[in-house]
Image (cartoon, rainbow over all chains, first blue to last red; front, side, top):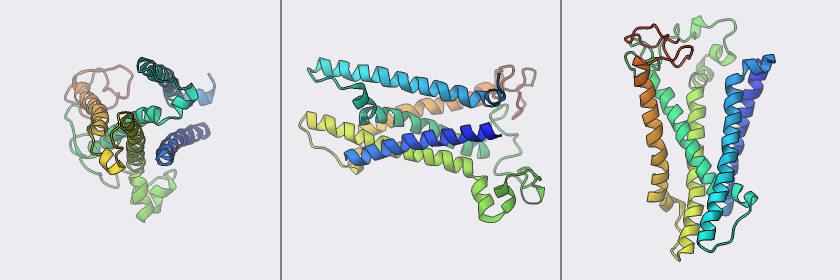
Length: 30
Length: 224
């Protein structure tokens, strides 16, 4: 289950980074 | 094949084709933007400028939001709406959130049930809806991101044509925002509806998305 947990966290991290960057970009360029 | 790869084939394969497609989108999108600039005697922009720009991220976010909306709705709708004969549906007598016995809750938890399933109270309520909560949050955040990056592009075009820029509240009522949103939604809803109804009469041997090949068309919610 260790490798499964690593990929679960990798997916969540990737999604959070994408969302975080896009929202920050929108707010900063505003 | 190493054990970790065999255990995670599905999520690794989709993660890789996601990254490859995103890279392809960045390369072709950059080419497209510079082609457009050349046609209008504008200056080309660098690849790095493009992939960090609102133009690229609006395109990424508008597709993300529609996919996460699709799954959020599907998770919610399949608890309450059924389709006779569909592998995507539960059996017809299991509509709703089901009993504790069916959901292995309360007195029916097992030794290896997750901690928050055994905890009871608020924690179990949250855990019981955690997939919907997380997928729904990703949908709403990516839709928000689409709207605030989309507004930047919209205002740049407005200024290029000597028109007034708009506020965020105005942008979310524009035809640009809703055209970008609904063109993605319509395709998701058609695909989901198709999966629900096509799986009644069609099969894919070996796929859990299909009934077993020999299962009758009338069988509802039997994984193959």
